[in-house]
Structures are given as structure tokens and as C-alpha cells.
Length: 270
Image 1 (tube, rainbow, N blue to C red):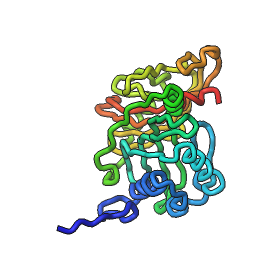
Image 2: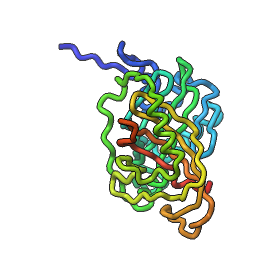
Image 3: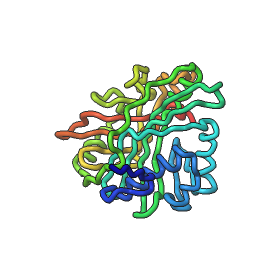
Image 4: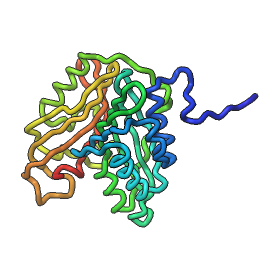
């Protein structure tokens, strides 16, 4: 029997090209620490929307910003936990993990979600969030979260048509106020036994991005309100705060039955 090894840029005949781009992003760029791949998979005006900031264009801003993180975590790993795609849009839930050169080699594993745009050939933009609050806690305490299980076959994910009814259900949920505490939806790293409270009392909600693939709906939302505590800044309780969240949830029979949400708890006063 002959065994053939195939590099990540040699896609199988069944792989969707959008999924193939994300595969190269995860494996060839981040896992290998090779920024040269960016010119092949991203447009020059690529933009990352993250934590209220726009990181772009690609070569002048985005690549140097990621290089700084790679310098802090020289062995940075990225694990794909979930992929959803409708052909036009794609969402990736992932874990990043590694050892920090700035914290005596302490390790951390933290969650993230990215909502990607493409033009049929290359990536053009991404709404993303990473749980830097959990990362900072782990590095400071010298403890490490458990690593979430990888998706079994993330790079074989096939596009599924969007569902307008599922999107409507999620829009109503997002604009009704605080989404924390929703049954079946895990926030940040509470799945690993950590306390993740509501953080703010919501008074205003803006849906920045939202799309679906079948019963799954991905979103990025910005909520403003009053700080309730829970991020180590109790001296600022009662002050105005902004909480950004990204999530992937499942809708069945017009109700949200499960999902994951990552919030920018470290940037609520940024």
C-alpha cells in the first residue's frame, strides 16, 4: 500500500475553496508562522475588525500586528473547533494556545471566533474576537485552561444555504438586552469551570455582522451599557462600558438551543 502526504494547499476535489483558504490561514500561515502566505490568501486591503479597531491594510498593519503576537508566543498553535460556511461567508471558532516569552514561559489556551469575507479568490475582511481576558488570567496565575476538542473534519465542511428565519430569531435575541445566561449557550471559558458573569447591563445593541448556514447563525455584536463588574475592575462599577461579542449559535424550532460566545471582556473600557 502506498501512502501519500498532501500539503495544506493541495486541496481534495471535494474541499470548498473558501474552506481551503481558511485551512491555509490556520495551517500554513499561523501554525507555521509564515507571513509570506498572506499575499497568497488575502487581498492587499484586507481588514481585521477586532476590539473596536481596524487592522489593515494587510502588509502595513495586519501582518506586523500578528507578528507581535507570534513573537510573544513563538510556538503559537491554532486549533479549529468549528467551521460553518454558506458559500459566501464563513465562520471559524478556534483555540489558540502556546507559551509566552513575556511570562517566564507560562502557557495559555484561549478561544476565538472569526467571521470571514472573501471575493471568490482571497480573503477580504474578518470580524473577530479572542478571549484575551482568559489569556491574561492564565499567564498571570501560571495556570492553563483545558484545550477544547478539535473539529473532527473542519476542512471538509461543505456550504449550507442560509436560513432567514434562524437569522431573525438570533437578531431578536441579540437586541432584547443581555444575552448572558441563555440556556445551552456557553460564554468565554465558563465551559472550563471559570466564572463569566454578564459584565454589563445593556442599554444599546448594534449588530455589526450576522449570517447563517442552515440552523447555525454567526454574529458579531457591540453592546453598550453600565459596567457590573467581573473583570477585576470593581472601582469602575457603574461607569459606561462597551462589550463586543462574537458567537455561533444553533436555532431549532425558532429557539436558540446551543452555541458558543466569545466576549471582549478585557476591552470594555477601551
